Amino acid sequence: MTELDQTIASAFASQGNQQEVNKVYLTLLRTSLFLPISKDKKPDDTEPFRPLFVQSDEHYFMLVFDTLERLKTWAGDQLNDMEFIEIIGKDVIAGINDNVYLCLNYGSEFYKEFSPDEVKRLKMVVSRIEQLKSNN
Image (cartoon, rainbow, N blue to C red; front, top):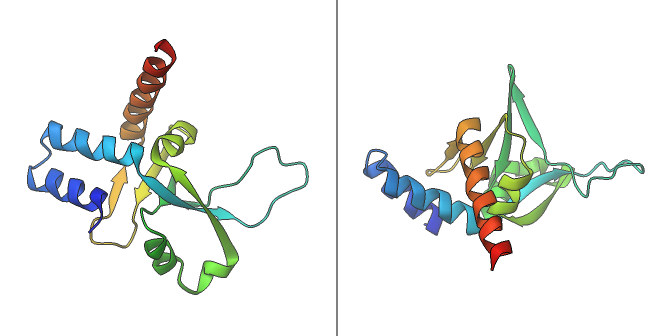
């Protein structure tokens, strides 16, 4: 069980107690995550990488995993068709579009989906952290 698993389990057990939910958010922001990315890079592409997205109806979902093993389990025999990067949670949040659902550990016991509203709140937290850093 990872640290994120533990905080998510505690938040669920507390029935959404805000203090426990905040622990999930803060743990996510400082955790190293594995993000599946596209192998295809166009020569004129200015982006360093392209995250893989899942589209369902009008919604977009971006998957991240807190262990490499979880990413590999999810990818299965498709692992050779993608690449991945290791990235800190706050950097994932800073770079994600506000309309995307962030899916943490899809397919695991402690799967957590962060809605676009939660992503926006997390972006505000990241912004405040960066502001505090620049003031010091």
